[in-house]
Image 1 (cartoon, rainbow, N blue to C red):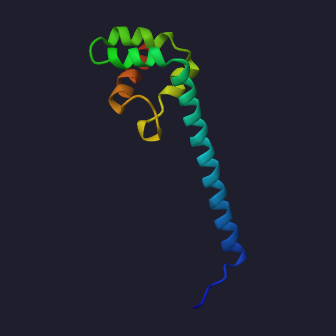
Image 2 (spheres, rainbow, N blue to C red; image 1 turned 135 degrees about the vertical axis):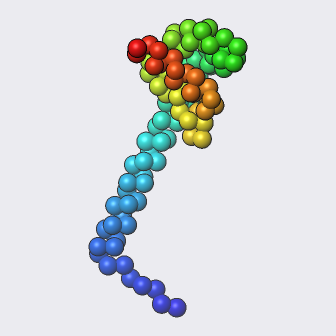
Image 3 (tube, rainbow, N blue to C red; image 1 turned 30 degrees about the vertical axis):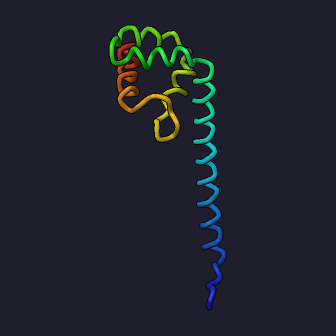
Length: 102
C-alpha cells in the first residue's frame, strides 16, 4: 500500500480550509446559543406568538414588537439550525419587520 505524502502547499491549503470550517462552525454554534438563550428568556411570548400567527397576525406582531431587537434577531434562526419558528412563521414575521421599515 502506497501512501502519498502531501507537499507543503497542499498541507497549508488543507489547514487553511480546516481553519475556515472551524471558524464557521463556531459562528453557527454561537448563533444557536443566542437563539436558545433568547428562547429561554422569552418562552411564554414565543409560544403565544406561534399560537397567534395562524389566527391573528396583528396580535402576533404586537407580541413580536415587544421583544428586544437582539432577541428578535436571535429567534429568527432557521429551523434547520435549531430555530424555534418554522419557515412559514419566519416569512410572516419577516413581513412585520418590513412593515416597520416602510
